[in-house]
Image (cartoon, rainbow over all chains, first blue to last red; front, top):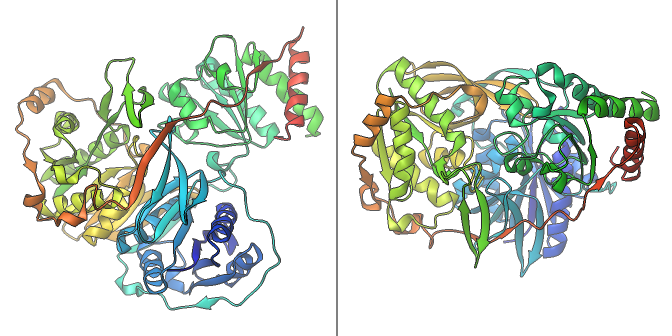
Length: 325
Length: 267
């Protein structure tokens, strides 16, 4: 067995943001194991993606460029990656833990009966194995997990690890044929409604969240305004979603989204353990709450004890002035 | 039509965890430390709706110990028509792959199933990978992160669903059989009815073992596991102590906070 492989997620001919992180972690693992780093590029019209993978540190690019791979259908991409891995026997296969990367890594591990460790937030090399740190029990505990035998299939969570640096590397990709013919695929993708333009919570660098303290649907207005001024996304606690004040897509926490922004501003959120599970890995947490004993202050780097309806608009005004927006 | 819904008994969302001598323990201040995995409630609801619409059976299935029957009773109380426990000492310590082997065999054992439904992940292991792996082991098509079943025609053997992905909503059609995982947007799970609870408490829940499923010893359980999960530990405390920003006026406080955040380079 030899080689470290990373599967490249891409859209519109460009690397997905998570792919830079996957290339970064791939480089670290490849160097740690003294193995070459191969980027797997599967799709249609993906020469540009292959070039970008070289440019961000891949030693080699292997993949398939075919119309049947234009949409991400795991039943087309999965068997292709599984076959390549079976033939060439890499030591490690790493993907991003996006919806696509999760599906792909689970498929390949199942087809090859390989060990699978999803959702890594850190990786270290120990005795020639990749040890993956991952949250379990909804982020209330951590586990250091490793595959004990054979191919190690790993996925890493978005924004957990540093992106690869540009290397200005280049090379010739090796292209192979797809494995499953279009007629043998059971699925057809017939529509896609893009949510482009909205800032997605899981990718956001800045999140401003509101909790029970906002008092009602209209109470989210100042929160939304601050998020807009900062170019961030709007989050919410479960209580506000359950009350019907804001749609579920904004929910942060154990039964909502797990986020890891640079800045998380919690306004009127007490900080129940389920909410903490979804946001405690944020780099800087700011808590704004009238109750100085709210648990959120134990997690926060900065806190303001006060009424969010005074503090949040004032903060938006302050940043609007400073950022010139 | 026959629908199977795979469920799991997990710690409650309010459970508080600690690790003692390498073992994970939990307790719940509300007094109910174990519940049906919250994500599975949406899967149960969707299986029941499919059964109500198309007839046939909605069979709840779980792999676990005798205690896991509680999850099956919840599924029955909500309206599943049957429940099956898959339990064998040989399954203990399975990784996701071993679990997929067992669940795939148990689904095959039900015969003529056209749709198997899962919640998007279980809140204990949090892997969310079983759906795909069961589909691969069955040779069926996986459809993950489903937010709506737009159309299902058991006779024509087709299904059209909407999937909720990072960049938007995808509409995809497939031939049956399929293994789907559902997200919270798909429905509003019903509460068990009083009659349902009585029925569930009286129900005889059959148990399938490794022998019933004709499973090789090497396909599941601790010996077959390729993943070492042993090292579980409590989170290190966040290395911050909170700085409460003081000031005479709100304006003064937010000015100080803005300066701190700019200095942290997070804006």
